[in-house]
Length: 331
Image (cartoon, rainbow, N blue to C red):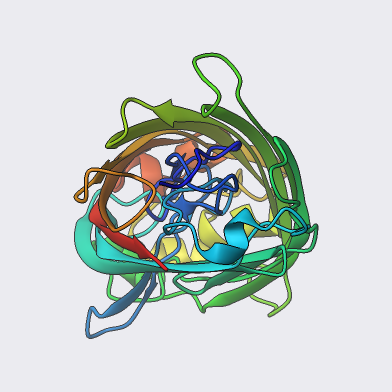
């Protein structure tokens, strides 16, 4: 029987915030993400097909280690063991940030670790942790590059007034993240608390601005079968972001019937707050191996100058709910 992990994960919210599960054989893996903290980024098309994200651009912990292999018990092994994990499911989300229309989309997630270096994909996002994780360590530092595609208002828009403003183009954002997590905090050797900060810059010339998101998360096992985690984050945006996605000039006002608005792009702002909860339940009876059901919910609140935009205040909603569920497997 595999030894219990010395570090425990948090499975991040499906394409938004996070949670995790206890690990086998002394090392914990990286996490699944639910849009957490972060915005939910959906790349959509007119045919309503989408590449959705198990994205939380900001939460990063663990779930599901595979059964111990012979090398896992090697006392000379320096780095946490290699693994790969995949999750598939569905998300129910607003069609874009600030929308009161919803859609259900397929979602996927892939992550892994090779020679101590971890990586994860959340739909069209890629994150690589360049700080190698040592075997059995309880405090894990994280740092590395990120790249993602932002698809707000790139697909079909149901609201006729917002549609009259015109579609936005997919933005390519590159940046860095840094964080720290510690295992064995309050309730057991396996609960985990983590903090992460990520920042990115549009390199495609769409909104031409930056975003930054600090996130904190906590989770722990309820039993050998079940795990529960919570997360909270704030999203900050530069002036160009607010101008591109939320301001309305005179020409667009005439076309849409919405009032002129220039408040979103006046200065950088904390434009969105999120709270998330997520859980995992092992079908095999053991969170450390086999198939696991995962699911969660995230509440986001559009705030400040973004919430006052007619796109949100008049024809949308500042309350942004996201729900997700699916099946994960690690090998």
